[in-house]
Image (cartoon, rainbow, N blue to C red; front, side):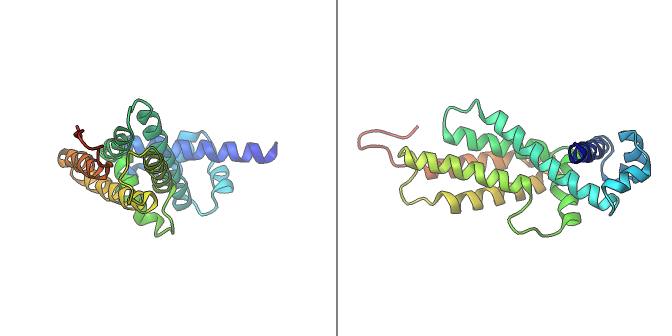
Length: 200
């Protein structure tokens, strides 16, 4: 019970941090404002995050990554094909990153605060795993070029989408071109149609 309560309070603090990030951006986040948003004393905040603001921002970065993956998973449910579902992941990354507050934190300022992580954060890992699963299923169904390597392609696609998200945060109006580029890549990965049939 005690550990559950501690975890719940940490989640409340992270949620308050995300509210401030989404509303005011990184510059609007301080210990005082987090405490006020979470309706907790500063001492309580430090009891759960001894390293203060930086530790809370790291936790908020991971929470933002989970939020991104959950949005992509929900949006992709409507996709009829593996290509449509992966394309939805691309669109979700672009839409998320275009936010001048939370998206900018996740794509631009957050990674510089967090530093290098082998395997990436929760968002990058989630994207990579989900895209790999889609490509693996497509290959097993004979819909992906036989020589295509789902694992390697998932690493390349998820990393490229991460870079596209960074550009979307910096240049929101021109970011849509990345979704079109992913569409072309996915078309090139399709298995050749049986003789006499044409690809749409």
